[in-house]
Length: 398
Image 1 (cartoon, helix red, strand yellow):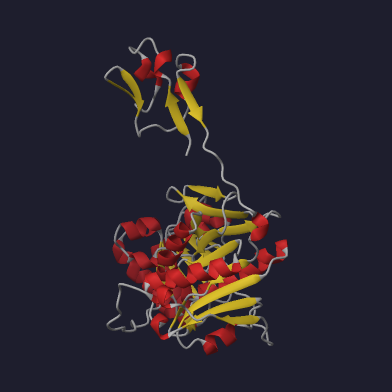
Image 2 (tube, rainbow, N blue to C red):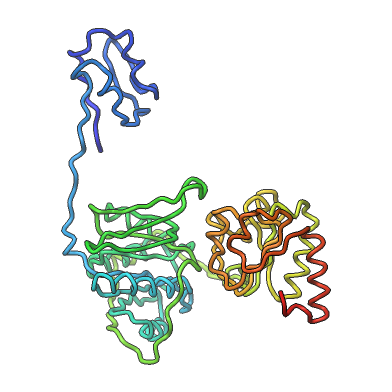
């Protein structure tokens, strides 16, 4: 870290010295000037203080041999031998990134009885799949899973590691990144790579009000987590390819203070990410009671109801139905927005939809800029009309 050094002997007048810092970080104790934790390293004291009194010392920059780290790796998230679809989406992105820098694509998977899963992965263009198959890895425990993940990185030394933004991925990736003292960018919405293998990572920040562009030029490996439905899964290839590397985890890797006493599979819940049709409630529906009208339309179309952030925060829908950068990312075949203004944060979470129909009483609403079909009018008048048209089978022109 950078450091601010105070040369006490060059300060003759203490009366106005504290006024130099707009953050109140300059303190005087026993006639000595000290810098508190409130310091933002803005260097105004260096610029405006007594000559030579404050010295800003840059931290010594670390360097990394980037040539020693090759490949783009994907952590395969699986439960009971079923691959989470976000992992296949990341395999597709890994192939794209690796192709730009002529690097191999790696995958790592941990669990038990993974033969069928591994064989399936060979149909997606991965160059080498490292498999940690052991009874002690049947159920996720952070200690052993982090240990085998670390072992994989030490063996393969990939430059980039992509992890799905699932409960397991969000638990595992930060812990492993910390072991390598490297950076991790969570919930990336865009990834690209430079010719020098630096990963361009873009993600929403400050509630989605800005998009942060992040690089990790002086550390390897580079970690990024990505939510489901951000990227597209690659086509399954007819012929399998790629090397399978089976690794037997050591007793030290499997050591854990956590013992799994029982495991019960949750009842499957349909998530909005998996729906082909979505009807989305915005603030413009005005009343919670109008959600029922949207639900009727969703039921008629075989879809689900989602909502914007204001609707979720008002308690009209449960949080798992929120669409947008601070909620879920969706790519349905059809999305019908009702009373949605079309903020940047919302649009970024649904722009991948094949067909967008927007209903809004405001003809200047931003949502109409991305909609394929615009319906200007009151939601409570238009939806009953749509329901009548659907009942008659007369919606071909919409």
